[in-house]
Length: 138
Image (cartoon, rainbow, N blue to C red; front, side):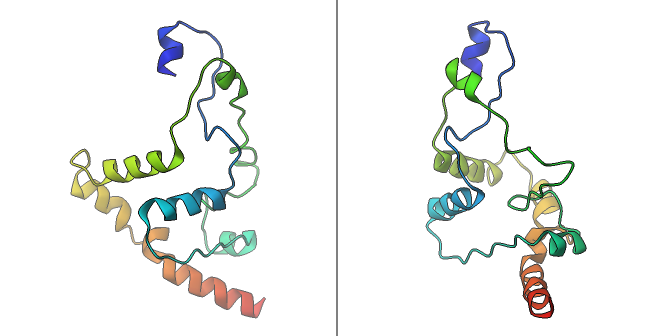
């Protein structure tokens, strides 16, 4: 995008990636592999459950509703044709992690997100347990 601006290119450019189609599970697996940690991925793809538990608008839970349908379908073909390049996904994941835990953010700002009592981060185990109960009773 910087190169396009420098070259004074005009038009609508969507700087979205990756360069090739990637599923959410591909992205999550790359994240897992980036940090080489043992973890168990639990995919909750039950829209009814998510809505009943007020879990909205969180990756990997982008619901295909009126507001989000197509949000991950933006075409970057014109941008690629005009020279848009991409970094490796793992590099972006690692550098985002490093930025998050750098001096660029205060501990208070991180805590506001990481310790929010209503966040999925804080409630992940509870949500998964509720989902498993929901499946049994469904």
